[in-house]
Image: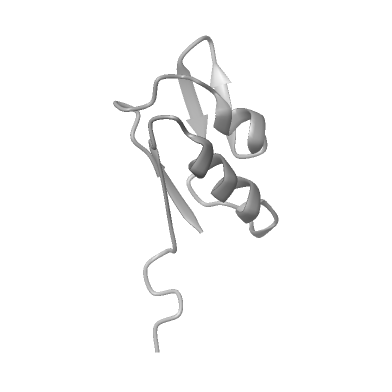
Length: 69
């Protein structure tokens, strides 16, 4: 699983940090740091974090080529 965060849209509500602290981290009041390639054991947490984002700044997807024939 890959994630992208639209940092222009992100408002620092930190719902993602609360729901998936191993993937998202807030530095200071508004600087969001994240791991773009999500470990398998964090997939459910990251999907919940993306759904909980008030401004829908987190995009979740699969790396290119995954599941291709």
